[in-house]
Image 1 (spheres, rainbow, N blue to C red):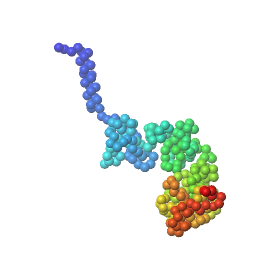
Image 2: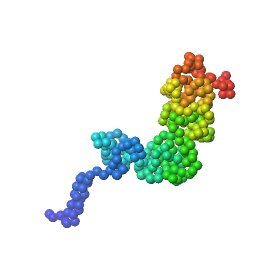
Image 3: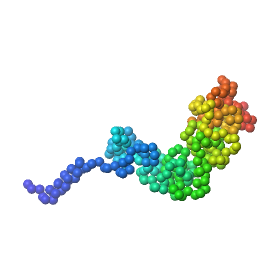
Image 4: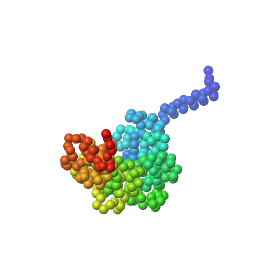
Length: 282
C-alpha cells in the first residue's frame, strides 16, 4: 500500500536528520585554541582530567588537541581567556581579558588589599586576574593608576638581590606595611619578603640575598635568635638573617661553618633570650 504523502515526507526528513547527525564533524576549536602553549600571557593550562575525551573537553568550553606538532592531544584552555571566579578559587570562567588589563605582571599597580575578592575589585573599576606570586591580582587598568599609587609601586620595584630586610621573623604583610616598607614574595632563596623602599634603608644596612656561608636548605637552619628578633639584632650576634619559604624554619640562624652555641642542646638557641623577652616558666 502507498503511504500518505505527509508520512513519506516526515520519514524522509527523519532519515536526513539522522544521517546529518552521524556525519556532523566535531565542533571547531574557537580561535583562542589556535596558538600553542607558551609561558607568557596567552599560554595554556590543563582544563580536564587525565584521559578526558574530546566531546567532554569541548562541553567544558575548552580546547582539545596537541600542544605541539608531534604531541598527544590534550584538553586545555588559554591563560589569556581565564578569569578567576569569586565563588570558586579553583575554577575559571572563560572570558577574554580586556586590552586595558593586559600587561606584564611587573607593571601591575595594586588596586586592592590583602584578601580582596574578584567582585570587590571589579566594583572598584579595576582588573582581577591571577599572575606571578608576589604581584597583585587586583590592579589598575592601563593609565588609570593614581599618581600616589604609581609612586608607591615604583618605590617597591627592587630586584630580589637588592632588597634590604625591613621586617623580623614572622612579620605579616600588614605589619610590614605599617613599618612603611614593601612586602612581596621573592623567587630568590633568602631574599626578604618585607624590604625597604628604594633609597630609604638606613645607612650600613645589609642588602642582597644570602652570602655563601648563609646558603643552606631550610631544614638545615639552626635557630640563632628568638621570636621577634630583628635583622640587626640577629646579625649583631654574627648569625644569618634571611626569610624562608618553609613554615617553621627560622629566619635568624647560624652560619654553615660557625660553631653552634652549646652544641648538643637542640633548644639552646631558643633559650638565648634577652631579659625583656623572657617569661616565667615555673
